Image (cartoon, rainbow, N blue to C red; front, side, top):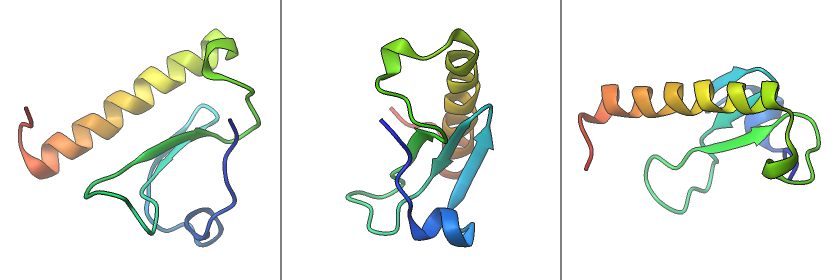
Length: 77
């Protein structure tokens, strides 16, 4: 998996969070409301082979994204 070159990254818009070699952003043409993509900033062939430091960053980034959604939308089921 690798980070696609998109307008979000080039123009620094719709970026939710960025940390530890990962980025979370809302794509321009989302398939559903509040869609968020989390991608590594450097090429990674698969999630299972990621270094543990990157996986720790993923857990913190995922928590940050979910917290942000809950804060804006309230508790979701």
